Length: 364
Ligand SMILES: [Zn+2]
Image 1 (cartoon, rainbow, N blue to C red):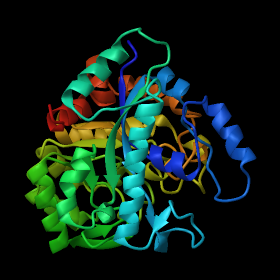
Image 2: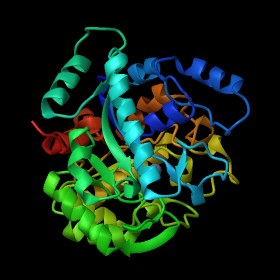
Image 3: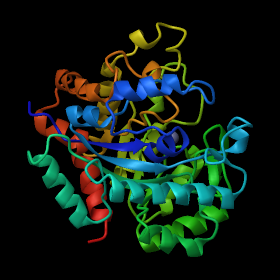
Image 4: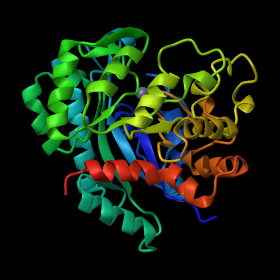
């Protein structure tokens, strides 16, 4: 089987680079060493990322997030770029992270590209198909994880012009809707926000939204909808939060032509993994089973992809046994073959489905 091109629908790149000073051009081993040397401060999980490792796995395009936590869900002594108290603080951090992606694309263009239009997507994919250079640059499509930073709906066109293409309404709960561990439906502010998003053409990300809010969005949002990093709750042993997707949300998302980024994160695969076997007991086979479960609900392979969230508050300690870095992600594919998926179907899952969706959402 030729190595499929991989699109990763969720990575907190800007957060890691601006808050921890990580430099993902380096081989992963160097990032881990530098993290160890930068002792003190926030505890860092073992990084999974690095440009050589992306290239080894053929991961060439990511949805790169704008992310920060509300202070009530962060450590009280968090750095100013790590957490916010007010919407305008969130806006400042998110805007800085979006600027940072532009800065990377301008000053480190051998390593990073912003992919904001259909033409840029086409060019980026042909670069990855060519043998033009040995280490190819990572393409980034910006995704806002939690809409707190949108203080006023009038700002939305400016976010779009600056390159934001995907918005998730929630991380924790906020004025728009309920979120992870903070339940609630879609508020009237939330309805106003998605109406304004639809007018511009943003993709809506349901990850982290509480189920009633997600179901309302699936009924009323006329644009493209994804879940960038979320698994099927039904398959997760001991699962007891509102973070993952119910069968009803999955079925509606499929009916709406959406795509789900399955995450190879142990707590999204088996909530009892820490007590019962640890990392070694969690296998990429369970990720393949998550993918298969969504395909069985859909009756086809067109609605599922990958959203790793690697380095998003988790590290090598928190992912399946087969994974030491992102270079190991293709070890998933033999498990899909065992479940009966052929190479064309695996290509759809690795990137084809998200590529089709995002291609139709990008401006010309
Ligand atoms: Zn997340």
